[in-house]
Length: 123
Image (cartoon, rainbow, N blue to C red):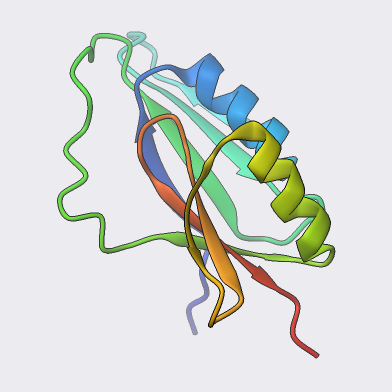
């Protein structure tokens, strides 16, 4: 048996990314790993619900060039219990990059260009 554990985003500015994910989605660090030689730092973020799935942010201090995200045909998705309030929060942050009102979802963009889909809890 297998199950999802985490998903990785490589980031250029770890502190900026941590601040964004805290403000936008209330994600907080669950654990960190730092290379003995300082060549990388991993920070695993957890959601408020305490789900076992985490977002891993990988920071390479020597990297200065933005990551090539290809065609960006992938994304991470979060369900929002208070979809309307979160939408207004993201609108105020200026991070909404695409809305699909027909499907009832929208996407926010993080500081490195990764898209995150926000979907309502459907009952």
